[in-house]
Image 1 (cartoon, rainbow, N blue to C red):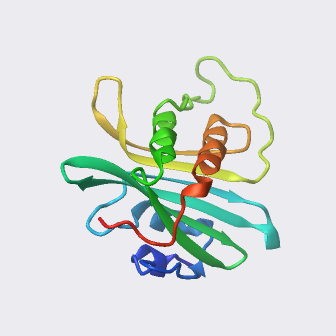
Image 2 (cartoon, one colour):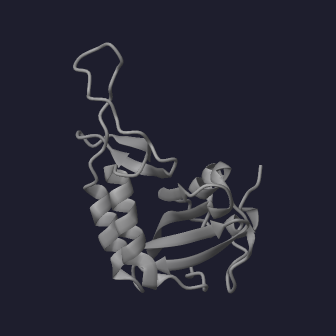
Image 3 (cartoon, rainbow, N blue to C red):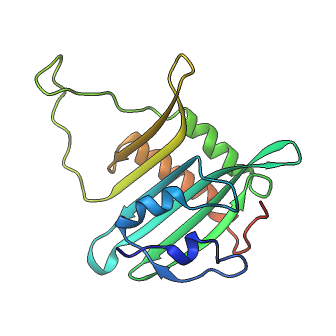
Length: 180
């Protein structure tokens, strides 16, 4: 399995380290450490086909700094080979906290058990792009914790949120890794 091991091991402190990326790297994207801090969430867009295939993925962390929690994000980008990582945090980029607030309001899919209840209309054909979201800090209405993983396609609320988040964060990324 091709992995983002050099980036995920945190070796990109000052420079982006090229490695290989593919959609089989999702488990590593979800578990990449930031110093001693483990991720609380991640999102990724796997798009295109063949030579035009690309990956955009962001791993999210909640870092404790001086008695407050600061959101930190690591982005991995790849198209046709080497992947590069860069970083931002909510102190340098307030748009990160804004994207996270919008994520909290993201409409989640309901369950559709085949043959039970009301059958929904047929879903539109998927275009091949995948949008993935994972959160280890999800909550049920009563406050109980849960882990959540969702996959969507173009036109889904997840795809819309992710396209908006990538656009909002576009000018925030830097090669220098924030200090944990």
